[in-house]
Length: 187
Image 1 (cartoon, one colour):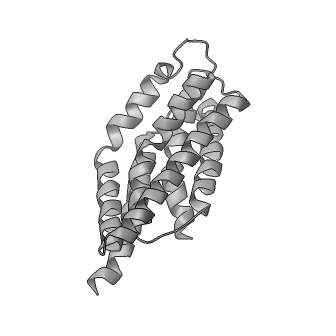
Image 2 (image 1 turned 180 degrees about the vertical axis):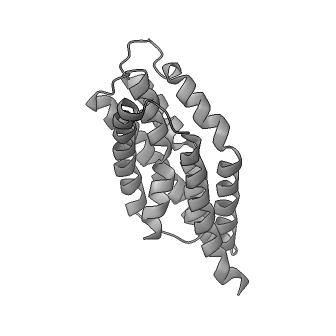
C-alpha cells in the first residue's frame, strides 16, 4: 500500500499540468503521452536503482533514505506555491512552437518536468531498502490518469480551486512515508 501512496504523491504534479494544458486548450497526442510517461518511467526506475546501490554500499542506507524522504517532503510542502503557479500561469512555455499540441520534444521536456522531484524521492526510497519494480509502473499509470483528469477538470472548474494544495498533499505523503521508515531506526 505504501508504494501506491508514493506513486500517487510522485504523480500529483500531472494534475497541475493537465489543468494548465486544459485551460490553454493544449492537446497531447498519444505519441507525446507515450514519450512523456516513458521519461517518467525511466526517471523513477533510475532513481530507485541508484538508491538501491546506495543502500547496498552504505551501512546506514535505510536511515539515510528515510531522512531524504522526510527532507524532500518538507521541501515540497514549503515550495508548494511557486512551482504550481508557474505551470498554471505559463503552460505555453512547454508548448515551444505555440502549436497548442505537445510535440515529441515538448513531451520529453514535460516528462522531465513531471519527474524531476521523483529522482530524489526514489533515490531516498531505494536507499531506505525498498526494492519495488511496481513503483515506476504505478507512477506511469497515475501520471496518465492525473494528466487527463486535470484536463477534464479544467473544462469543469476553470481553476476555481487552488492547485498548490496538490503539491502540499504530495509533500505530506512523502514526509509521512519517510517518518514511517524512521520509526524502526529510533526504536
